[in-house]
Length: 268
Image 1 (cartoon, rainbow, N blue to C red):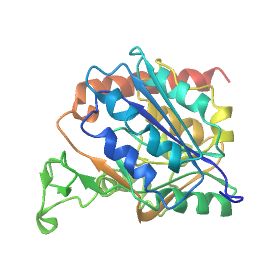
Image 2: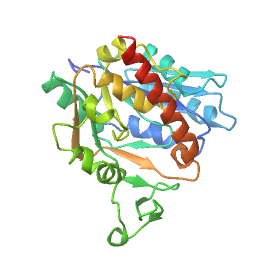
Image 3: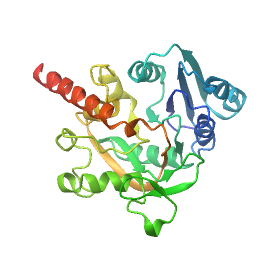
Image 4: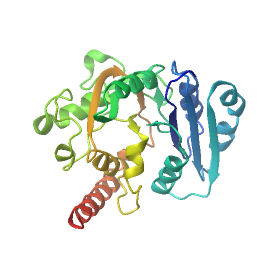
């Protein structure tokens, strides 16, 4: 591994027997070598755990270390807290158990953070894939289409950028990832890498802030800058059971998270 910093890749897994194998393989195929992989199966009712376990030998041969754990269903916040507590790397890379990291993503992110001490989070482009792993795009209603010329959004990132263009401007703006710009809503794409020492300063995830990704980036923004790289680093899978398709649930979680963040601010 040389003198390269260790990266902890963490995966919370739940009922993704069809996809988690491809997720793990995308980590095994990274160009960056010094990686530990930590996966917790949060009480899946399908064969997710069997799929994860089948990769033990490959992980032992390829990675600097790996931890596979299984628990009774405890929810995303509890699972993420356990995952981050197990991470021993200088950097932590978050990936969902139905998505795929591009082979050079970890290397690109480490290189950037090693060269830019004032940045605490780095993320890249999120092209979209379907249930079968085929590259696709979105129409105006976020339905998958396969002709880029007939699409409205070429990537998930483009969808996020256009949705927040009036408030933020381009993702190339210096305002990207500032606390002020994130306070009224999350726009950070998936598949980000964060400095572990910053995660250690945050008091973890809480069920009082159930939109955990928004809560996390709000806390991280208090400690430094964030960078968006225009590189294809993370393939976002759009399928029948994506959580964000439940608009009422997401809206309620967002409201609760916002109110909790307000209480955090008022307590200081």
